[in-house]
Length: 269
Image (cartoon, rainbow, N blue to C red; front, side, top):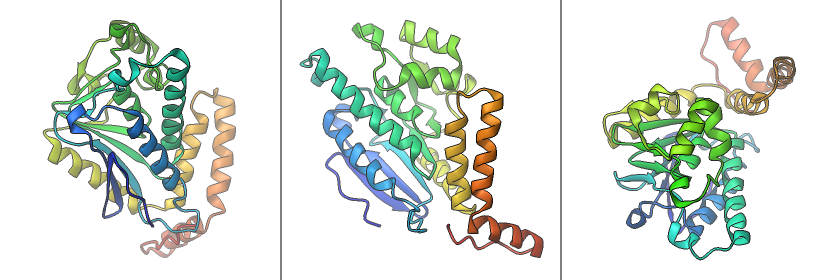
């Protein structure tokens, strides 16, 4: 599968993982419009994974170039010349990117090294889960600029850490280190350094790659659909997901392999 070439992104396949590196270290990987457009194009390509029963990668890892910054935030210099209408276009385009990340049929891991502030934290939260290096820091500092989160932070931060903690972090603009992010549930794991961080993310993708690809895709879709529903509606959505998975050839193979006490060979559809 051709994943494309991009001005601001490095895209490299490593085993079953696609490593996507935002490559603007001179600006701490800030989300300039060019970066947003590249992410928009790449997520459009990745949305086709599995449609032809081919799964060239089983997970995506998003990180930032260098050890200083995952993504320091939106591009404030660029934003300084925007009027409210242009700002809305900028925000909505990034919303499209984050929604596409959430809808990808494979898990997406944010491997956060250094700063994940403002738009960087929002990009990370659009991934399925977050891994961080010990030097990582997170925050929504928009109020310090007279702004509010514009790339999904008001929605996704409270989903991750609860509404009370989200309010405190957004109202104060406070930065937190990776240990605190782990404690409040924003981060899944913390690693000593960038090398260990990427190794941990790659290991998780390889673990996922041993499972049925359609089952992983259906599980991700179900969790996204169920999020925010009440218990009754959520259970009904789960039944629909269960039925859909049960009808796949991956499910037929997985059940047959279990009964025969052999390793499954998932066909990917």
